[in-house]
Image (cartoon, rainbow, N blue to C red):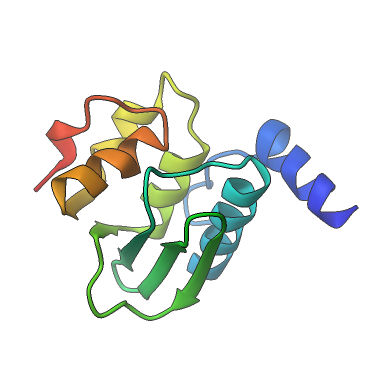
Length: 133
């Protein structure tokens, strides 16, 4: 029941953070993993993403071929590195498809080119080149 309510909130009630409102990276990671697992968002192959939040530490998002997971800390050899702020990341992940390219510009995404493309494709973006650095 709690998972169903959380998914409803993500689909219908999630809004961008207000100015000055705290955004917790752990919640962003939990939400990302919950949504990706419940919506069965898959990648072409397993992947490890490092998400570096300015001033808030690093986290690992991992796709093992069937399920997503997260943990605190940066992996040793990530396929993709995302450098951003928690606000920018949350805005990116909750944006609708039309707004997402604008929010993608606030992400510095580097790594294996195929995996970077898979990262953006998993968010419905097919032309992510402008955000690579």
